[in-house]
Amino acid sequence: LNLSALRRVRGLWKEELQSVTLTELWGGQTAERDEAGCLHLARQTQYQLKVRMGHRLQDFLFLPYKAMADPAVRTLYSKYVNAYTIHEDFDDLRRPEDVAKYWVALAEIFEENQNVTSLLGMARRRIIRLDPGLAPTFDNFVSSFLVSRIGTHLLGSAFFQQVPTPSGGKKPAGVAMGVLQPTSPASLLGALVESFKGQHPEFAVPVDIQGNTETSILYIPGHLRGILREVLHNAMRETASNAEVSGVQPAPVKVRINHGQLGVFVVISDEAGGIADIGDVWRWGEDPAIVMQDAEDSEDEWEDPEALMAKAQVAKATMRLPLGFGLPLARLTARYFGGDLRLQTLLGHGTNAYIHIPELQHDGHFGVSDGDRGALKIG
Image 1 (cartoon, helix red, strand yellow):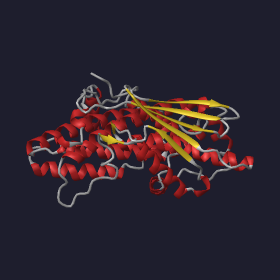
Image 2 (tube, one colour):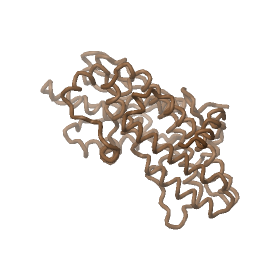
Image 3 (spheres, one colour):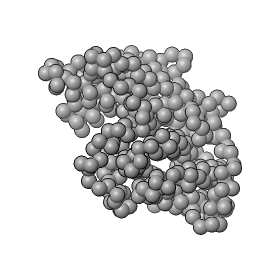
Image 4 (cartoon, rainbow, N blue to C red):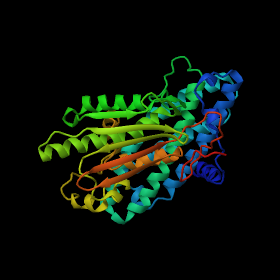
């Protein structure tokens, strides 16, 4: 950022994010917009995303020098500077052709930034090796960054879904699953089981899905899939590993779906021996002590940006989250939408994961913000 751009960004830090209701994000029957409606949505999306990017740039600029010196953090910062600069170029949206150009530019930004979680994981590991004392500060940065990312994707997905695709344009991956729509938890769970067994046959264990398997809920399927995927795959993987060590057949992972007045509750139960240090599972990434223990045996990871991007692209292609990011991100996502994820474990036996999925009424007033807690709140 040059000095002039930095002054403009600092001006955005004082601006509060405007509330955007789920009615405006609704991707169902009312998704079609006329020319005037598309222009209004484009202006709203451009401004909202520009403000959010300005807030994220503030978070970057206030990181300690040791963190900002990390190559992955610098790469992320450059991505956000580039995205912010592009949004400044579209401050004057007036005609349908302007909307089309913004559509294409935003799609390129979304595709370019799909691997940022992998870069965050790389950055955290190296930063802690450099200075374990930076873990609390950087973990707060990660939380704020990922909360903002959820809101950004909601706004972007709604825009791509409601504004016609320009000639030659292509929607970014995940957009169709990123808008509010009827969602079947049982269907998502069944698909996840088959996917995981196909990718990791060594972890194939029986999964018994019971309860309200026919129920559907108004939700964002892409986000619900991410929550369920992390919990279910952990249960299947640990069950298979525990059975192999014990020399016995793996007990089935049991899933129960209940639908009541407060939404859907999914309970995933395993008999994988329990979790010894359950408080640590909510930490972003590995424990700093573990990172420091293997630091001397690891290769030098202070790579140039191109090498970092190559690693991040591999992680994105295989749907892998950085080690230790899965459960914290699943809980953060659940809470963003007013739900929750809790674990109950019994050492020597197994773990129950309780997932609350509230129904998101498309005609309700929910504010999409960058708040630390659940950002979808009844207004």
